[in-house]
Structure formats: structure tokens, C-alpha cells
Image (tube, rainbow, N blue to C red; front, side, top):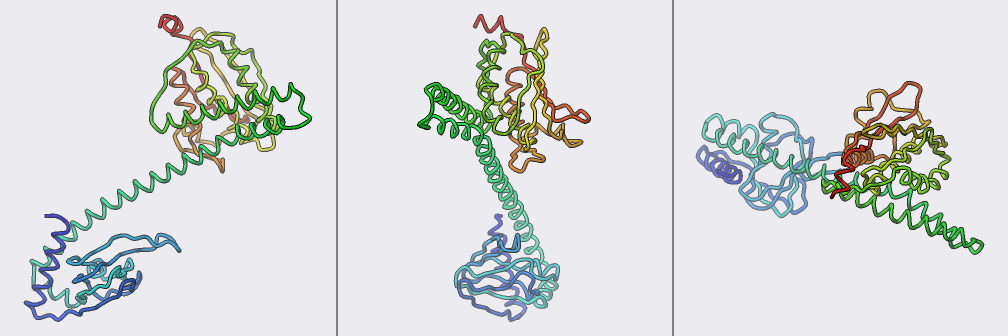
Amino acid sequence: MSAGQSRTNFVNLLQSELTKQQVEPEIREYKAGQVIFEEGDPCDGLYAIIQGFVRISAFVSQSNKHALREFAAGDFFGEMAILNQAPRSATATAVQDSRLLLVSHEQFSELMERSPQLVLALLNAFSHRIRETNVHFVHEMIEAERFSLMGRFARSIVHDLKNPLSVITLAADAAASGRAAPEMREQAKKRIHQQVQRLTHMLNELLRVSEGSTQHDLAPTNFATYFAEIIDQTRDELDNKNVTVEVKTPVPDVILPLNARRLDHVFFNLFNNAADFMPKGGRIMLRFDSKPSEIHVEVEDTGPGFKPGIVQKLFTPFFTDGKPAGTGLGLSICKNIVEDHGGRIWAKEVANSGGIFCFTLPLKNMNEMRTR
């Protein structure tokens, strides 16, 4: 038996018992938009819908009323207050002109005492209603979470795009200046081209994350040459934030299997993440260690460091702490990229130090790559 059939059966049996036991219920009529009872009102009985349409709603905040359920002819409502003798927990409003049958609390108690069959019918209808409510609640929660994730994802895109757009704006202003020398215009053109490429790769990475896909097209790349390009691309935006990059050890002059455009995102994110925690400026120190099977990269800043207990959570999607504009996607994307390269990434918690992030990139499989 469906939920609708169980409720119709209950209403039919209720009307039959009212006639059989010569109980006179009250018939009430409401115009469309008229309130039947308000949340918090005392219970006046159980309602059965003879004709019309009724909406049940409740306040989810001081100013936001949310529709919970809607009932049509042959259905009933208001049973919760009957069962627990408590004030109304929601508001009932006639959506259409409606004709309702009202059975008072006293009348309904008498009917249940004389008709075990009515009690069973109510329990059956109530059980179906609870199950329907659970399904509806789960659906609402999924929808709410879906929209929440969409909002976070959108905020992440906007937040990440601001830096390259700022560089493009500055470069365009420089190129458009009537006093700009040909060399300055050429440099501005290069900056704009770099940042447009960066925007494209950032959007592709966000799309890849949203689709759950990975990318394994790695190419032999000279790491020292690649890293020099990273410094060149990030210099302007970090200078604008009074942040300097200091390379404390030699950059390994080795050939690595990289997807350079994806790995860009790791450096850009770690640099800008550090800058966000140094609003008055500061330093980013880089250290490299070349080992037989991998290179080790360490990025340290002069910011406040990590709060106790959060290091293990930093790479969890949507976890954020201490950044008003943070979305918690940046580090999880970095983890995905590094692991797609066969490496590892982690955060180090060191006393009296700023934030420290480390990651590795493997040197292996180069012979295999050359034979493909």
C-alpha cells in the first residue's frame, strides 16, 4: 500500500467512525491564502481535507519560512499536536479555497478508544508519513549540500583568478602608456600572454577536479629551467604584495617527468597561500634537495605558521582555517597534482616557524618515458 492510499484509507475510516459513533465534527472553510493555524498555536484538533489544498510551513530562521509539506483532498494534517498534546510545530495555510473537517482532541480520543481499527490505520498512515518525511529530508539535505559545494567552488574560482587578472591589468596599463618604451611594451605583452595561459590552466584544473579525472601526460623537463619560469611569472604579483622569494639552495639541474602547466598550479598556490598569511609582506624561502630517486622541494614563509592540530587536515577538500576568502580547495588540488606526478606533499609543523610545505617529485621512469 502506498503512502497516499494509507492516508486516504485513514480519512475514509475516520469519516465512517464519526458517522457510526454519531460524533459531529466541525466543518471549516478557508479562502486561498488564509492561515488555518500558526506555529505555536494551541492544538484544536486533527484536520481532514474534504476539498482544496493545504501547505505546511515552518520558520528555519527569524525571517525565512520554509515549506515542509503540501496536502490535497483525502489527506489529513495536525496529528502531531493530537498525539503529544503540544502546541503547533508548524503553520498551515490554505493554498486553494479549502473545505476541512476538524475533529477535536476530545472527539478523536473517544474514537480511538472505541475503534482499534482506527488506531491501526492512524499508525499505518503515520508510519508512511514519517518514511516520506525522511526521504524528503535526505533529498533536501543533498540539494542543500550540492548548492553549498557549488557556491564554494565558485568562490574558489573567483579567488584564484584575482591574482593573474591583477597582473594582466597592470601589464595592460603599462603597454597602453604613451610613454612606454618598446621594451616595456614587449615585456607587458609577455606578461599578459603568460597570465592568460595561467588562467586557462587554472580553469582546466578546476574542471578536472569537478569531473574527478586525472592526467598522466608527463614530459621530460629540465627542472631548473622550468623553475626559472615560475619565478618570472610570479615576480610581479608577489612584489605587489611586498613578498620576496629567496632561493636558499641551488635548484636541481635535472630532467624530471612533469606536466609543467599542472605543476605551475602547485607553486602558484603555495606562494599565494603564503602571501595571504603575510598581509604586511614577508619572505618565502625555497630549499631543494636532489636525491637518487626524487627531488625534495620545501616552501617556507615568515607568516604565523600553523595552528596546533590542523596540519593533518590541510589537504582535506573544503577545509579552511584563518583565511576569510579561503575555500579549502587549493591544497587539495595541489595534493592531486603532486600525487599524479608520483610524488608526495605534506605540511611541517615547526616551533617558532612560519608555514612549511614540502613535496617530492620522482626522477624514476625516465627511460620508460623515452621509449614511449
